[in-house]
Amino acid sequence: MTRLLIALITLFQISLFSCDMKDDKGMGIDKTELFQKNIEYPYSASEKRKMLILNNMNKLKKGMAKVDVIKLMTQPDEANLTYKFKKAESDNVIGFSLAYILRRDTDSGSAIEKNEQLLRIHFDNSEKLIWSYSQDVDEFNAIEKE
Image (cartoon, rainbow, N blue to C red; front, side, top):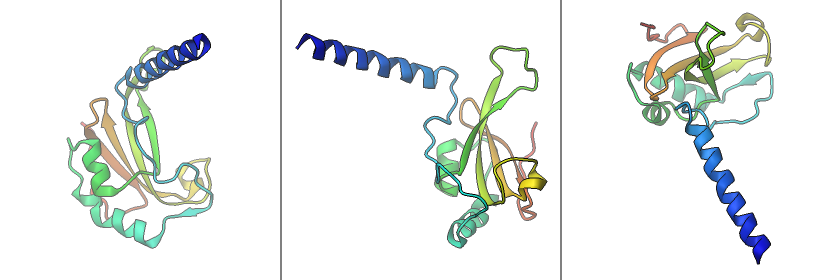
């Protein structure tokens, strides 16, 4: 009985610690459900997914909440932290981005080498849309950085 009690207390403390770690910097990527956890390359989105993204992409507005972007666009394929360019600072995470991949040939290399077609939507640490851009999606109305 004592071992069980100690195990339960330990699990409780670990869960509290991991929640604190996730919310420590206010980044909204750990709670983001991805459309796919592992992408096999070459990758091309299904026609249905591609049309959903293309039909809704120009409805994005600066200041939109992450949850509203996901409702509009569906789950992203990737979620990545955004850093300040100065690497000397200890806390240089300034937000995160969600990526909607329509096509990508390989997982590494430059955008040209990957032959990727995607939308990247950037958020600040309060989970508000601050800017966005596309790679090889001419019809997308990018939201400019300030």
